[in-house]
Length: 228
Image (cartoon, rainbow, N blue to C red; front, side, top):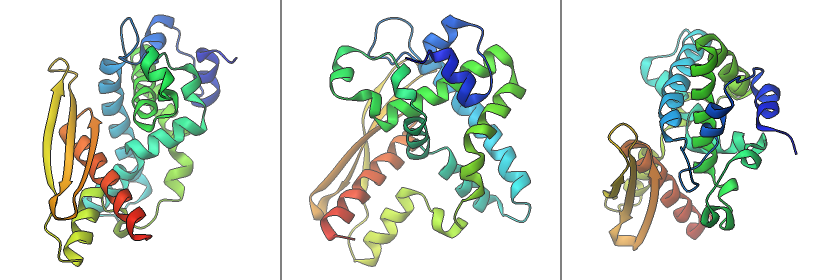
């Protein structure tokens, strides 16, 4: 099996020399030892900055709102999770027994978090230029085929517009759980459409991210039930 160091070298074009740092980036909180939540926090910030910079140069005529939609699309948990799955990152993540049995190595949220943590490790070990190169290598193809900004409305907006078009009351969001230290909190949010009897729950590193993921899951249920 390919080593984690070789995977980073092949996919990101760099080599993390600090093995302990890379191991931490690839350790989910369900496993024993230092986990990747702090590195995920850092990698999320680095990723957001580099993607914002890429979009600023790639779309000189775009408005602030359009750039924000482009960035949200590229750094979403769905996008990062799908990318990490394609690249085989799940093979290198350390999971607790429960997560391993439930297929956590294929779960989009776990994969996305680990990918952000790896970016954080690259930044700490090799600096911002290496991190920039890694992010550009990861996302260049997706940047080139971004749809129009109008098509990139976030899940909460799309859910709201869909419900409004059908005359259905807007969804309610509630924080079900907050865990972790202040610098590395996890939020569990529920999105509920009472009149339809629908409920979706999601977890994220911020309330906003958890709300967006919960809205996305509820949208999927609506589409599945309507056949749309």
